[in-house]
Length: 152
Image 1: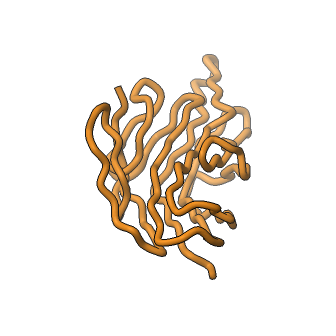
Image 2: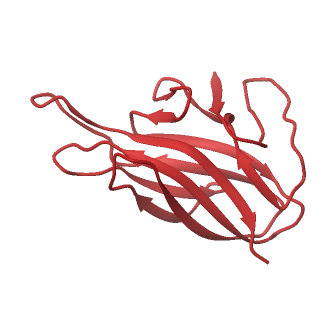
């Protein structure tokens, strides 16, 4: 079963068996409720999504046209042995970028994307989860928002 979570403006929710609704636009602000994920590894904390295990967070986008877009992900993290969270960015299942966070405060991570179709599945894949049982440090990735803007 997939559950959806996020809190901003327009995107598509995928809850097992429910239909999707979306608006065709040149810019999209994704809400927490627009994202789909495995609730065993990801949790909606109300104001952000907590990725507490290696996992994926996905959203479907329906834009007015293909083209060059700027994707902005607002994220923060927690460390284990001074190592910060890292993630891959996938579009339609293909890795198009990677990044990480190095702060416990939310900051923007920006990607330039050449989207070849107007409908795309955008996925954030948390790749380096860790837990230190001795110190109780737990590396997590937190996503506050995601926005997609047409560049040209």
